[in-house]
Image 1 (spheres, rainbow, N blue to C red):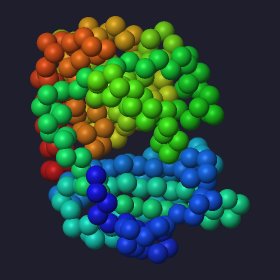
Image 2 (image 1 turned 30 degrees about the vertical axis):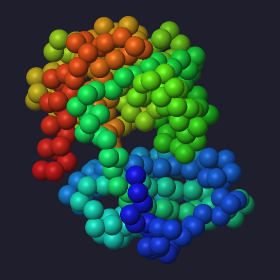
Image 3 (image 1 turned 30 degrees about the horizontal axis):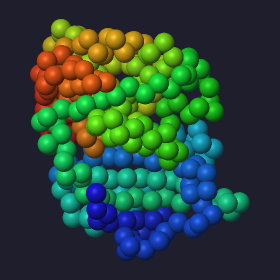
Length: 284
């Protein structure tokens, strides 16, 4: 992904090659910052207000000053227009600012999309399971675990992706104690058995994905029944098909879990239909 345009709160557009954070910003010192990633379709950020609301909620959970949503919308307009991109990735960040100063920093940046998304969608993803060893109720209820918060403290997530690559896979899925399916490092997880779709409940402390919510609004008209809950990984492994959802990757079919095929070991019909519904919602 190549950075195309960058805007900073209080400054507006800046040269993408210009440094914009101090070395003592708590985002760098402690990984204490909130962020959002949004896909841009036809020059428009998809569900921007939903992402901004989640950004503000994450910032509040992290103890950051209130997010100025009006100012952020202005930054978004500037940076998207400056990028000139019809299809792109928009990333928003709010940091606490310099240690002890109490002046938060807002950033908006537009980058190119990963070049291999459609190739991956066509072949499907190979996943591995990663055991977190946490009780799902503890993970959801303990405020210090930041369940459902999009924080830049992403080292565990990136380590999980690195472990997937080490094991010749594409991505990972986290499991709570009892081998309960949670989410991927940057995705929500779904599977289909017959005409029923299954996805972990937000009560497990997983991220309330904006793409996840868009798909949930589409499943009924496509003829599927959806179930949200706490499900063992054996349900995922034995499904007819599986897929993940996220803002940038959209709907990605899953064809393998821990070295064994899921369903027929190829992208399934529900993933294709929901991908089409997502694109329609984003470009209508």
